[in-house]
Image 1 (cartoon, rainbow, N blue to C red):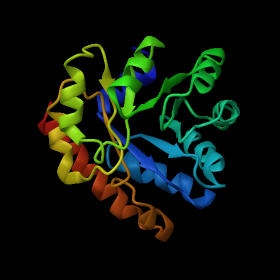
Image 2 (cartoon, rainbow, N blue to C red):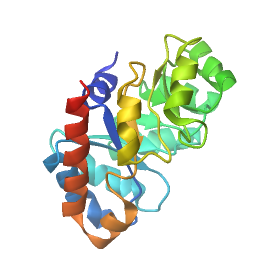
Image 3 (cartoon, helix red, strand yellow):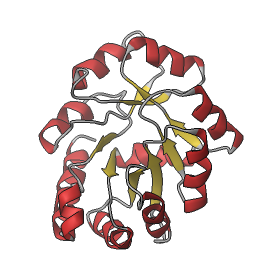
Image 4 (cartoon, helix red, strand yellow):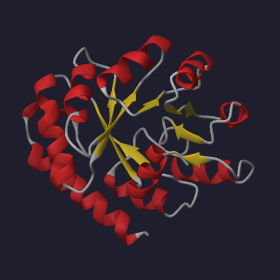
Length: 210
């Protein structure tokens, strides 16, 4: 595994954040770190996203990924901002090719067995099950793990704190992604204590399931 994948596997959690204001980046990274999780996936869904990646990546020891990458040109933009890995909501051969050209980890999204097989055929064994809850949740991960034993999953989408144990029990789950750790409304309001509390509670659950 790459260094980034090992880090995600070690934490078993990926905060997925949507940030509207660039000036929230540093405080958000500090809040997640205070909760025991020096990592986040910043989705490219807002005009401020690249600035947020740059701000968070500047914090020593903090690892940032770029999410919602759907076009090849976004890969280079994310890397220039300081992203260490790329996450896409689906599998794109063009995004995959750009990640290989720039030698960056890609975690492509899949929602079906066919999409998973496409990703595996392309050499991508770590995939994002998305949107996890609507397509079957932990039961879907377990079902796909049978015929595709080499796959490792980062389920994301519709997952909350109460669902976390169901995923953590599955050995093929590399890490669990979710917005509940740093909800958009909390970040917008500057309620970083809530982010730290959510993160600390999730980290404690991970430790219980090791």
